[in-house]
Each structure stands twice: as structure tokens, then as C-alpha cells.
Amino acid sequence: MRPIGAAILFAGLLLAQRGGGWVDSPTGPDLPNAAQRAEISKERYKKNVEEADKLLRLAMELKTDLDQQAGPVVSARTAKDALEIKKLADSIAKRLKSN
Image 1 (cartoon, rainbow, N blue to C red):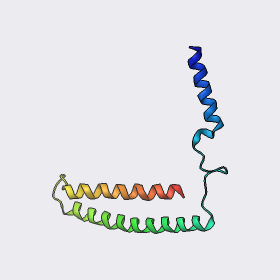
Image 2 (cartoon, helix red, strand yellow):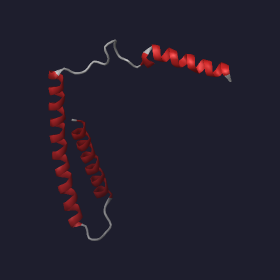
Image 3 (cartoon, rainbow, N blue to C red):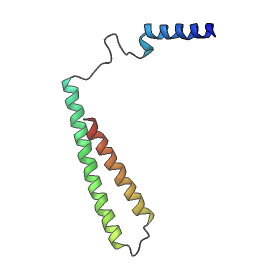
């Protein structure tokens, strides 16, 4: 049992000396500068607006479809639209949380 423990300890020491092997550069990973962060924010905002417009359109179509149906059974298209609405809402929420 001792040789195995020594081998594990040795491997751990090697990884610790090398920094675990996941550092991108000697000073750490490159972070975006202020101009790059501003551009990323603009792109996220634009994507949020586009997806919100699509979300609103799909929600209005879903409401119309549900109003026109006669009974508790929904069509496959209506169910697909509802899933698309959920995906869009989740996508927007995820981007807003990451800001």
C-alpha cells in the first residue's frame, strides 16, 4: 500500500508544480478589455431584443391558436410553439443573468 500512496503523492506534487495544467498564460487567462466588453454587451442586448420580439410573436400566435381550439386537446404545432417560447425565455434569462 505504501508504494501506491507514494505514487499518488508524487503525481499530486507534479501537478501542483505545473499549476494543474490549466493556466492559459503566465499571467492567467486573457480577459477582454473595456472596448471588447462594451461590444459583447451590445451584441447581447441586440440578441435579447431580437429574441424578445420573436417570443412576443410566438406567444401571440399561441394565444390565438388556443382561443380557436374547441376543447382541451392541443395540436402538435401549438405544443411545439409552447416549447419554443420556453426555450426563448430561458435563453434570454440566461443572458440577463450573465451580465
